[in-house]
Image (tube, rainbow, N blue to C red; front, top):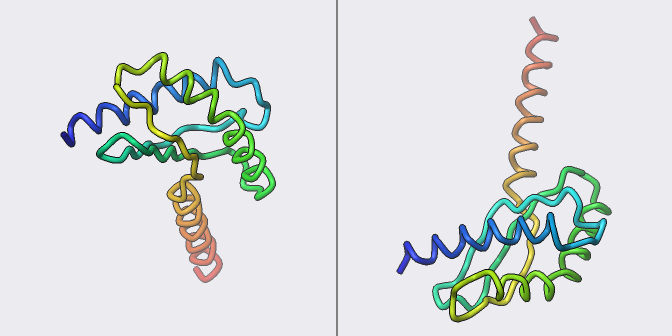
Length: 119
């Protein structure tokens, strides 16, 4: 069963990316990248993780609002594209790992700069 869930997650990620590029016309979702998908075992709920290029909190809020507004369209499109008997409820969440990675990069750069100042 775990293998099937993984295939469904990969298919949802691929299709949602395609739907965002080709069907959603909301400018708030431009530049949104789908980074991961988690589906429950019973296919009832699906968390879709995304990242955006901007670090601004206002850009993140706009992207979230755009995705929330587009969710019914995305779910309807998924129902036509997926071959599963049930289409999960979708929820979009900003991927925290991207910000964490940027934070680690910033700390490493700061250590590098501090090391050159002392040497």
